[in-house]
Length: 361
Image (cartoon, rainbow, N blue to C red; front, top):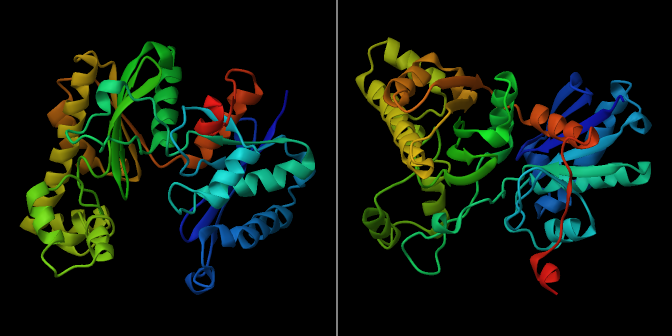
């Protein structure tokens, strides 16, 4: 059976799309949105018509007839906690993302655009591995302060896709393995996958700093700075997400630029680069304890995984735990498409999204 899948991944200033015929990519396109145009909209949801029109325009320009689509899949937005894998987009999900999103974020538009393209065609719209995938064990939720439970927010889409890819390439099942996946990008998250479930993570505010995020910082010093009177709430948030990490030390978010500085003899750049690798390795080691050291492989992925210097620095610290597999790239459109293909091929079953309050009724 042949299936044609449209994948949609809205970001803050762009919308990336791809079309796959089964597992073969036949179109990929990044649609850039002018910042001035985006500022006209009060809320992310208000960008819906504009972004949907741009997606349809690209399909038309590339002679992709929408009535040839078998399914549409969007990047899973910031919903209440959901399970891994595929969810059918339904009215409850749309209502949540439009009217009561957990956080206003461009990824929330993925499901909405997909649904509005798919519905008139009589085909299904899906999300796959939302940012909010939560398969934590209860013991992983406690933070140390009552009422301040840890949350499962991570690069679940690419992390699970690379874990599944690793299993397939090694002629085994994802559900039979214990894997640790480090996603290295603008933010860094590390996850542990125990027999097919992502049971714990080190989120981007719990572990390593990254190009633009501060990661785990000393709590008492952070509290002192918050109450110093020198910063607003918004400025403090920006300090840890946007102006933290590598950029706070070296005024760049580009790891390639940092490595150029190192080649030119910049000792501070060398220290910052090594410190980030050091902290990623600490997160990997931390999560190895979750599965009592029984780790079948450690996977390093994300855009920064293209850096041989970074991956070598991480590898030397953690290869005593297990073998290392480097699978670089963000791979989000591929992950969305291949996840949906597994559903269409009945290798996986899509879940029906239901609000927790209604599920209990």
